[in-house]
Image (tube, rainbow, N blue to C red):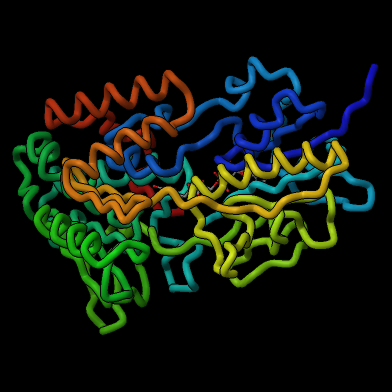
Length: 422
Ligand SMILES: Cc1cc2nc3c(=O)[nH]c(=O)nc-3n(C[C@H](O)[C@H](O)[C@H](O)COP(=O)(O)OP(=O)(O)OC[C@H]3O[C@@H](n4cnc5c(N)ncnc54)[C@H](O)[C@@H]3O)c2cc1C
């Protein structure tokens, strides 16, 4: 039996999957470890939270992705540390996993910037569980208000979304459409028009990475859907039944969606590597971890920089391109060739606001808005969604939702009287 080097990849997200896939045909044994037995397509989580898609549409069992790749094994478990001298990865309640090459692709998680009550009462949108919990809670608020309309005065139908980046804009737009198009019919006895969606952004504009015209388009599209967009506003504290703003205003509200902060996964700290301010692992130009010639960090967990020294954004294409780069570099090292620096190719940014409304900024200064941007957004997300069955299911749901002005799974899947953010 010929022994080949072992590559351990921690995280089966956008970056980790690309490493494993692009080592197909390379003489290595790959162990892909993830705390979930599935990959999550985070860009569509907000559609699960707003009853546009089923949870299973945006996730895919990792094992099912590698039926045709014999050099990949999957380990379902949570990584708790790395013994660099013994070259072993520690996995909770399981035997250690040996490695010759190690790739950290543990992604990012939410941060609440220390705002009192935000973690306790806010609803983050980072995992499939987060999305399902938020949907349960939103539908439950409408059921409660239908039973007791006084809930409206207690902020039962006031939904505050914090963060004017793509996730906040998409969630606010989708909630407004859900209420206006679907809940209006689901709850004929309720004054659904009194439901409020408030989008709060600290800066004086939405969609920070976009140009001024795209920002204006998004602002106008949200306001025309009835979203109360508050720019230059800051949340000071969050309670179970109210949110307090920095200017002293207290808004009765039972749902606060936290779409404001991202920090690298706690894996980076667990492993004890040098981190930047956002907790990201410092990497060299080829994405290797300084002082660890056989270890790499990619995607949201890595502080990778472009040629000008600017930090690369925490976006799926960055993680995917980095994954492909690291797979190539491992191949080069096996052939005793030097590594190459990572060069990110920016292929543009998009955000959708709702039905026939989106903004897209593509290479060559191509700027799209409205229906063309929306179609581009739909097409691109379908292409990148993992799994043919998921693509077919999402396409069908989108077509159904578009043609019938309806939504799918408005289900409450927990029995607790009140879902909380944590
Ligand atoms: C709501 C939302 C919307 C987004 N929308 C967009 C968008 O429209 N466009 C875009 O480009 N980007 C978007 N992003 C960002 C994009 O999803 C991330 O940049 C991308 O997922 C990063 O890929 P990654 O491989 O670094 O991490 P991830 O895809 O997050 O994968 C990390 C994996 O590591 C696993 N993991 C973490 N810690 C451990 C551990 N200790 N042990 C075992 N496994 C572990 C996790 O379970 C996870 O599966 C969005 C993100 C969110 C949250």
